[in-house]
Image 1 (cartoon, rainbow, N blue to C red):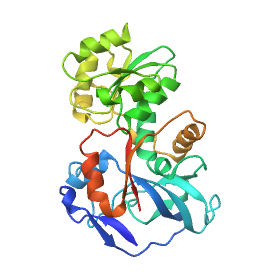
Image 2: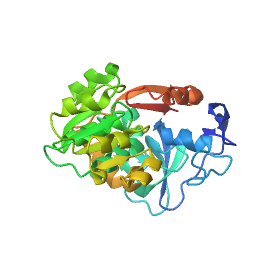
Image 3: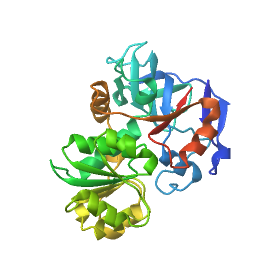
Image 4: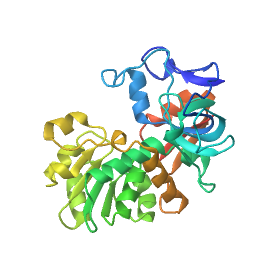
Length: 304
């Protein structure tokens, strides 16, 4: 089978699509024929060695967490899935491949009305958004600001916040304002004069801020009078430590239970996961070039 590998830290050019032996499902595992697998900024950071102290790579390293596909093989002790079942789930540095091993406890069945690309791009961004929204403890009527509101995590976070009954203000480029408005979100452009635009859009005190982009939004929130315990950043860990704000993300919600809840919202038409573009596995470098521009709306996926 073909799979993405890299044998040293580096830029996009270290990524290779190579032939490897197809794995076999062990006890408690399922082997999934991957139909779609999402890309995430954290994977690029791991590949570059930026997270070596926290999540070191062992070379040659695979990559990819999110996936959706069909069950090809079932390991001993697995009762909830059978060969041919359609599933969404997550694995560790292995989903960017034609086949991936998944712990059966880390997968859920894919509803038929949820597209493969959406199911395969959901886990990391979805659970990150879920944890961030939960971290700022939104109540009906709260005013919450989301930075990077058109990104992979941001597009989900604004919708989950809206479902909590909050008044949501999304910071995004003007090209994404119509999408945000269509989902009941008040859009605000980033750049000079942002604090004044946010105050005007809120029409009152801002209660919470979710930062999915980094680069000063924690300090912005504090300057707007948001209490530290109601600020969550998924990316600016230095600011979180300095100012004692929250930094809850995927790790705090990484479970099949949360994945099942999110995929249920999509099934019921209550949550949309925009797919910016799908690439074949052979174009993985092009996919990451697009991802690292940080200007796509929603998710980028590989389709092996």
